[in-house]
Image (tube, rainbow, N blue to C red; front, top):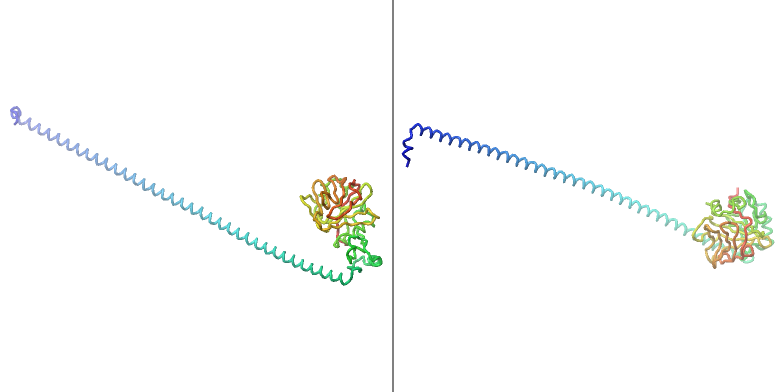
Length: 359
């Protein structure tokens, strides 16, 4: 129920109040609409941001995917390179295997050739034995070679046949000997020996292995020229596989050795059965001590000494590193007597000769 005052208000005031109320309602509605619009705009902006964020996330994902793809590609490249390397290694291994096969084949060929040579050598030995049997124990078998020295050779042949013996005791047990042992060819020398006479040189040369019989000599080393240094001796003899060592001691004894290999420091014995020792101690005639085959201690060299033959902790011939003294003892390698007829000796002269083909 309206109060009496309100009812008594003038109509104009009522109308005015209503108008104001309407205006206020309109303003409120307008504000509400504006607020709603602002809210809508803010919501739209939020959605836009969300879309942008989603878009960025999608782009990042795409980029990550691309990176992963690149990584995979790099891995594949590395793996391909590794595979290629493995293939190359396999190829190299196959090549090495092929080389080894070829080497083995070559070795087998060499072995077959050596076996064939051995067979031929055995056949030759058998033939030689047959010849010996035919000739007889008391006969002498000469291997004669036509040489420029033929006219000089013949008188020696006749003399050896007349004597019917070989002065070299090493060959005395055999029913034959080579012509060189009777001929005693005199070699030429580039520089005269300070130790051997012509007759001694001829004697020594005739006892050398067959392939040296008609070779000439050249001086490699001499302490009177090169000094008493073992190192110098090794340097002078480098690469020379065959040589003759000649020594004269302070008592005038002459002796030495034939070396079938190079003088060079080694941790073990070396050389071959062609090595021999010799001495002119008795009657100015050479006496040769060949290897017995009991052991293979033919030669030994180090920075302290040069030695030939060994048994019972002694050497057949031993030279100290100062090349001024040494000793000679009996050994089983050469079955030798002391080369200077006593134990120790002092070196007066020493020289080494090598070989040149006869021209």
